[in-house]
Image 1: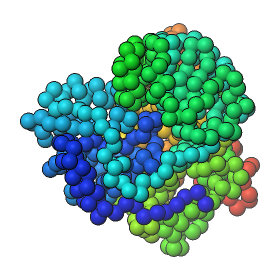
Image 2: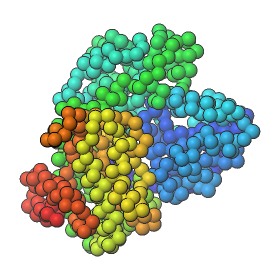
Image 3: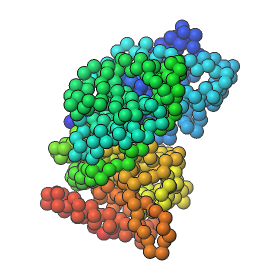
Image 4: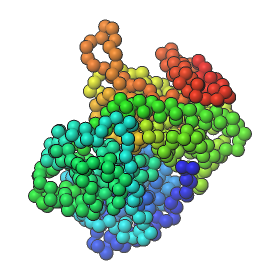
Length: 594
């Protein structure tokens, strides 16, 4: 089985670890030390070895950082984790609402007389350190060895999984062509690439260094002739040497910084993803640095026809598993014997029965009642609760298949929902439908569309504290940039980009609601009477029934009702023939017209 249910770090472990870190800070004459949730590759996800933030604080969320000073330790978390963090960390850590409060402003408030704050230059990007230094004139930021590593006596070993090839039949483009295409547009003589999913996409390889995400830990230097120097741990590339070919030169990662220092300039790096230590090494060597976006990021986001076809196949396969799960849940939940872990185990069992599942795409979220209000809730043996009658159950899950990555959320009524729950659910659904139906001109970004999903909630005085949608990879990370549906997104949406569409609503201590489909940006056909400007729209990839018991039809417009009926009709036609008799009957009832 893919899911494990280990107890989360105990809040009791935080205070002694914090005391040990402060003792080491004092010995080194430091007033502070920064502990981000990051590794040297600067991807979103970290291996167990690099989970320093969780080890120190107990906080298990996927984003955040801690600033440890002598008399206060601020743990910076965004709106997704403000309920979760209070349950996971000791009172010795002070939650700080971020990004509303910037680290620089907080440090100036806490250290008005200045001081020395140390950081590990592998774990912070060039842009992060520049922004901090520009804002902190009276506080010295000092590069340092990692102080958490010095006190983490049983720190896990670095991951050493071998890389494997991602076949052309799923990648849709040979890595020779990708390298040549990107090398042609380099702004320097070479580009340094540190993001694991960028390297995976560029070279058509995958790995197993990060749980749930099939990415390799490596560094790469792309040259203008299309060749690549690949730096990886000993033996990690042994199984892909023939796949890589003569233009990919493999080296031990211990020699990476040395090689960076010997590069002839100019060298291109992405300040938003490149570790500070790489820029420092180049500057010390007198090498000209050109700051530009990672050359893989946008081409990776624009999926080709093969990747789009693969995503559709993966979502149909995954949809069958989801329907089998929902039918099972409708039969079992009324008996009153299920727990949140039972739900996770059953769902992952149905996915495993596809015989195509490589892994789940993230730890399944199964939150019943008040646990559903914790946006990124992760059930454990400690937090597991019964799925109560007359409660809402929020299930957010996904699968990694060789032809695509899935991510879907459904909120299910267990028993009889209240009128208030139905109204809240329907407003969330209206927001999801608004994104699904919208047409927009080329050049529009996620920040322009995000409000469409929130408008039905805003009209009722409600909102949610997370983005409406994130990018999704192709058998890669379930969270992929740079595209998103978010107030902070400045990236124009382009054809081929995958996104999630997931508005929500959360009532702390009571229930959570989220509805999520994956969508792909496509060209929109012209409308008679319109002008000649090029327009885009979204095609839906996810087809799984919505819970009709939670829909208050009196709140819907006729266009919204028509969308739901058409969505359900398509779901039935796609998945019905792939199911057995009883499950097909359940699906037919679940997809009946409103």
